[in-house]
Amino acid sequence: MKTLFIQLACAHLIAVGLILSLSSTASAQALRGGEVRFPAVISGEERTSQTELWAMDVYLKPMRLIPVELTDPITGNKKLEYVWYIVYRAFPHKFEELTGDNAPVNVLDPPVAPQLFIPEFTLVVTDNDRKEVFPDQVIPEALAAINKREKGRYKSAVDVVGPIPDASQTDGSDQYAIEGVAMWRGIDPDADRYTVFMTGFTNSIRKVEGPGGKPIIQTKTIMQKYWRRGDRYDQREPEISLDGDMQWIYR
Image (cartoon, rainbow, N blue to C red):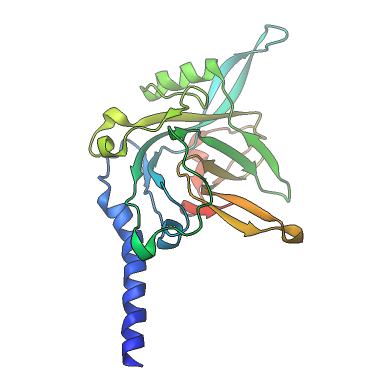
């Protein structure tokens, strides 16, 4: 009985160690003004079910909004709109493959070469029993204004797509950082609560049983909730606050 207890305790420590080692071995970058770091995490269970795993350290600035004169593509007229946005930096990390008895036995997703970074940000309005979904958009006029304001060269959801930099080169250097911006327009100014889902920052997936026993593939996703004090007559970004911590979830 004592031997079994020791074995179980060791197994638990190994599993915990796998998770902790992933975030501790990656070199954290210096935070820029207002950024929050969300570290890459891959669990022991994920490592035993999938090969060629990678995940990213993500640095997010607060959700902001900016007034921009946007051109109507049909009429050519300009109209002042508030564009909501989040700028981010991402640093990829590839994790050591398990070998021997711990090697993955259920490969869910065959490796793809080269690995591509394809981010997707979805903003969901969740207050007042409604669910309005806004995918991130490419808004060139807003992108120029955002980069001028943020003093950066952040790329749109289309321009940022590309091969993932070699993880061994990213530690300790901004040179290989992926820098992008998610943008939304048409957000209801009377809404108070929002949830942003961010995919593309890891290739970890899992298979679950869906309706009728049919398998469903879920993607590991970053989730961050926000809430805002204010209304359409007081659209100021300091009103937008984090509602809890960021989380890795499957959806």
